[in-house]
Image 1: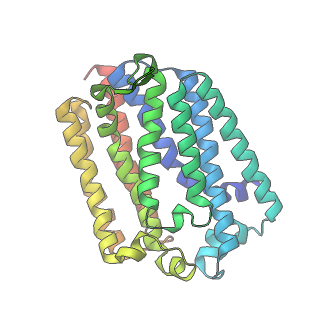
Image 2: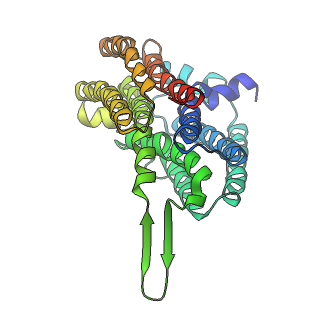
Length: 316
């Protein structure tokens, strides 16, 4: 398999959805908790990226195999197996190698941390596989946006932060002869969750925009996604609302002291984000406007990341 076809198979341009939460988690850990364990983070990132590519490749493989309609933009160009005429055996071998890499570095990550990382890692792996495989993959249902938003937008930065602060025992479980006690230090966990919500909303919108663009093909191929269930008009309203929630959350986090005051400058990006939303409202296609959703993630998350970097450097 050539590099170009591999990058298309794993849709490398979409990996920003896993890279961005990781970078955010690193900067938030340094800003809010003033610590970082680099080796733990590196092992986790390699495992995460391998698994993200694995699930995308598996999803494309399953879509190609299960497709009822195999002509038109979505399969002749969008799906790598059709575009590059990839052999099934080659694709399956690639999927297996990516999964092995994800598991191997995932085990190294667990050995450097504790059982909660193992538990969340297994849960994330399971959801990732169920997202693309099984009798009814999550990606083919109305829950794709929720799962992608929560697991990529929240669980990823949470794990990045947790691996550097697990010795503070923010989450613990104790068992004795008569009781099982679950302890949660909400003053530690709440800032992580609230600060990560813009990730959740932006990543959920990537999935939502993808499904809005694919409504006709998805219906023909029996993928009953959220826009099919609620209709395109309501899906578009939700698309715009999620960006509004992201900005409101940033204001809340600054007011609570979870983010530096300079993070309010992120609000300046609301104007181009709004223009991109209006453009997407006018036409929804992969070729013409889907990329605007990626741009919106960049316009919201990367100024936010830079604001935390400024907060670290200048003690803001």
